[in-house]
Image (cartoon, rainbow, N blue to C red; front, side, top):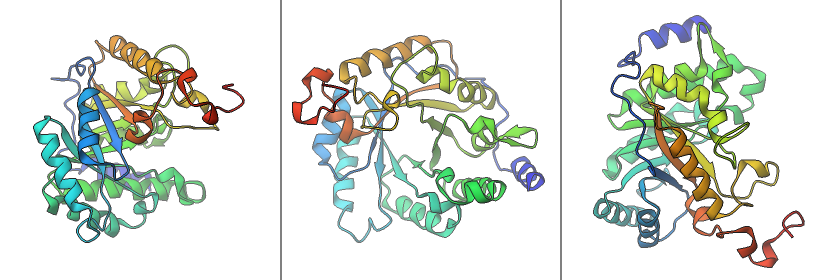
Length: 292
């Protein structure tokens, strides 16, 4: 299986070996955000503009052409163009690693709308049973999916990734390296509530930033704003919007010499928009015992 993966990577069309040539860190305050829900277009783009968001990952259902949601996406596109905001089609299910036909059907549908500047893939293969029962096969299926999606469209292909893919060896490379060979950029789920220091956004992302520099690919970091009861240090839900702004500015400041740094994405619009400035601003009814 490893030999197959190495051979496929070597034959991959357009695989980059350019390294960091031409890459410079994204400007300070370069922001993106996920949009999962059917929020009103005017509200979404107004918020994005106020937060200096230049890219929105808009969830697109496979049934978009028939379920009545196309008109809203068209309005988002119109408003995004006016605001000079790019739209990436957001989609993905863990099961797509074993159902490439469904993923490719979705991608064809996205392309047919003519609304998007790229594909933002949120497929997390480690959520499938195969990740524990047959890891080599699961990894191979995931990489083949990236190969096929890249070959099937001229739209820019980006992927959400965990920070630890570099720990998995595939021949002389790692899973992180093989993903970077197949996509135009990645967004690392660097979900931590501090910018720098041990176990921070930057600390957990260093491996991807270094590999991105070598591959000549952009690496965007990400911050979580929704509640994560099992991992409170993975989200700014408890700290609030002021802390989020402060810590993201620290990430910007610390990455000025980090060539692959592609800015920061916030997960996600619905939680970010309702994040109180400070924990004390949260309505009392929503406080848990650790916040009271």
